[in-house]
Length: 193
Image 1 (cartoon, rainbow, N blue to C red):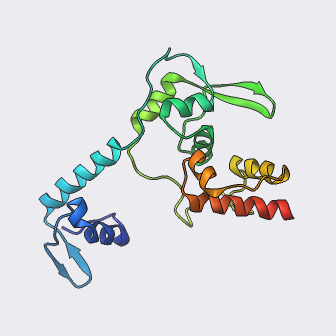
Image 2: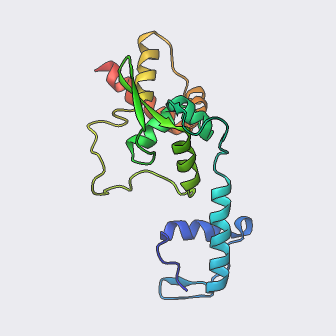
């Protein structure tokens, strides 16, 4: 069986790391198409998906299901690094729309019922998010990280004369240091313009 729907680069990576991840040996190749025995592939892939789902953050199920919570509390419930993860996922369409809102300094703060947050947590599959490049309907941005709250946080640091540390920002945001470096660069570009 050929592994349909899986990018070749992903298959190559899985195959290259088979000594670590248990990926099955190829049954053979015809031309440039690799084949695996269906039962071995299916068993490995199901185990792989279970492991990805099991690696998701643990959910705090305490509290009243009807209680409204803000993004910070929703992030805590989900085990995320902070509210920015909720806001980013919501902008990308990966977090449910709020059940209500309340007035705040910058407009209206979104609120979710605990039960909504729990239902979202139960629906996670462990698959990554984001728009693949060129996806129709993906929002076009005039500059990198436009609308990202983290750029504003770095701008505040720069304006106050503090030199941002990509390592500490990456740790607090729950991202890679490379992503933090890109966000710092985007903020510096805005700061200098």
